[in-house]
Image (cartoon, rainbow, N blue to C red; front, side, top):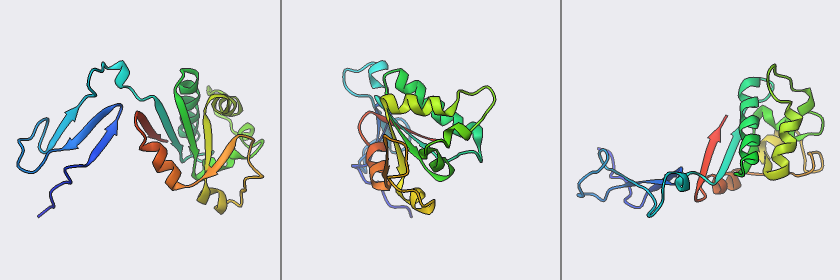
Length: 166
């Protein structure tokens, strides 16, 4: 038999909270869950104010890679606080000149997207991904930091934050 969910469990997405119902309480909005909208808010104010994007693809999956950088750049231009994480093959784009080697028809040039993101957001290179590729802090583009999973989780779980993985 499955264990009862922890009554204090809260999962946030786009300003909405899904909380498990206390054992014995009548279920709402499906078995064992209630949907809460922040008090006094309308749809627009419930939208995420921060966007954390994890890019797992590079030249090996160019469309997915380009989509991640494009969404990040558009979000920065829209005034959203953006944190873009480079993992897997996208880690190479933390190095000077590597974004210029990336080409995808009908897509914005990757160096332009990187510049836009760095101008108003943050780019982070995964610690383990950097180590596997022998990339150090002295090697990366100015403005790119190297950080690990703990920082990613902290950013992704922050209030009013939406996380996307490409």
